[in-house]
Length: 279
Image 1 (spheres, rainbow, N blue to C red):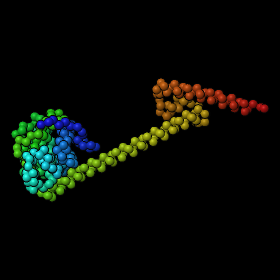
Image 2 (image 1 turned 180 degrees about the horizontal axis):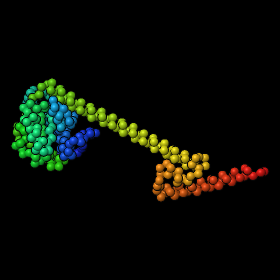
Image 3 (image 1 turned 90 degrees about the horizontal axis):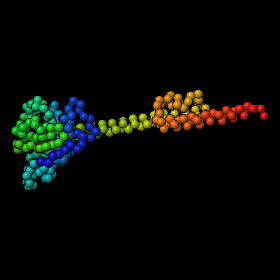
Image 4 (image 1 turned 120 degrees about the vertical axis):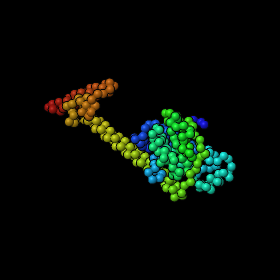
C-alpha cells in the first residue's frame, strides 16, 4: 500500500489536548487524513460516541460504489453494494482508537476491542509499527500501522474479515449528532478566537497610533517651544516616551532636528528682541 504522509494538523484551528503526547497527536492527525481520503466527512476528534466511550476520531460516510471498493467492503458488483445498503443503510459510521503503548491497549482490550457491539459500523485501531503484531488486531477491527514517529501511515491491516457492526438507527442518529456538535463547537470557537485576535490586534494598533501621535505632537511642540517639554532635548523627550535607545540612522535625524530646533530658538529670540527695541 502507498505510504500516506500527514499533510495537515489534527484539525484546523483545533486546540490540542495537553494531556496527550506528541506521538498521539501525530498518529491522530494521520488517521484523520486517512479517513478524509477514503471519503469520510466531516472527520472530528474527541467525540463522545456512546456512554463514556470518547472516540479519538469519529466520522461517517455515504459510500458510493467506488468508495465501498476503497474501503474493501465490496469486491466489485453493484449487487454487493446493494446488499451493504440493505443490511446497514446508506450511511456508515466509523471510529478510530489511537494506542501508543501496550498498557494503553491492554487497558481497553476488554471494554472496547472485545466489545461485541462497538458504537460504529467500522472500527479502526491506529498504532505505531511494532506495538502490535497483525494477529493481535481485534477481530473485525482494521489496523492502521503508522511509522514509529507517527508521521506516516505504513500499512492498513485486514488480518480478519472486515466486520461491519450493525447499529440501531437511533444510535446512528446520536453518533452523527455528536460529530456535528463537535464540528460546531470547533468551528464556532475558532471563529470567536479569530474575532478576539482581530479585536486585540486592532486595539493594539490603535494604541500604537495614538502613542505615535503623542510623540509627534510633543516633538513638534518642542521644536516650536510651545510645550512642557520645551526645556528638554529631543532625545530626552523620546526617552520619556520609552525610546531609550535609537538606531544610529534615527540618532542622526534627531541630531538634525535638534539643530533645526536651535535655529528656530535663535530666530525666535531675535524676533523678540526686535519687538522690545524702542522705535
